[in-house]
Image (cartoon, rainbow, N blue to C red; front, top):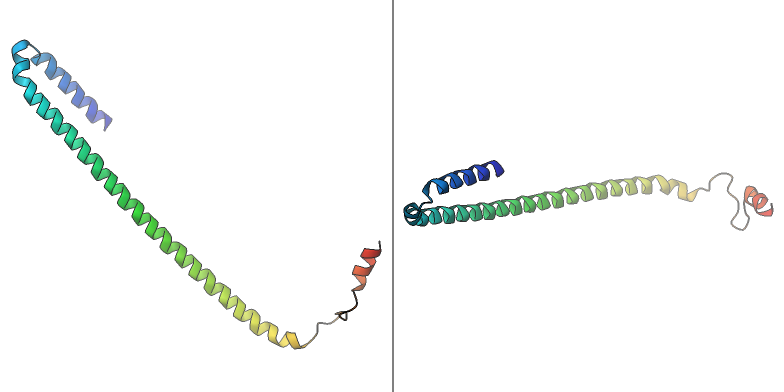
Length: 118
């Protein structure tokens, strides 16, 4: 945008130097004013369109991000449910039998007693 603005400014300056005599100013001023007004209006419209485009892009990004988070959450929940179901089926037979070397409920393991007395 800056090279275009510089070129426009240089062209306007050159035209002003050539036309800035008393008679040229009287004839050219309304035309120059209209041209500048049109340029300002075009610039404003371009900024509005750019802002709308940026907003649409941000909305699209937010929607995609929300969908991705939902998909990741659903996959994590499915994995957790599968692991829970597998753990449930694996622990059912072991729940009825006691592990070997387990101390009775009232007694502490020998290694714990030795470390506590030291």
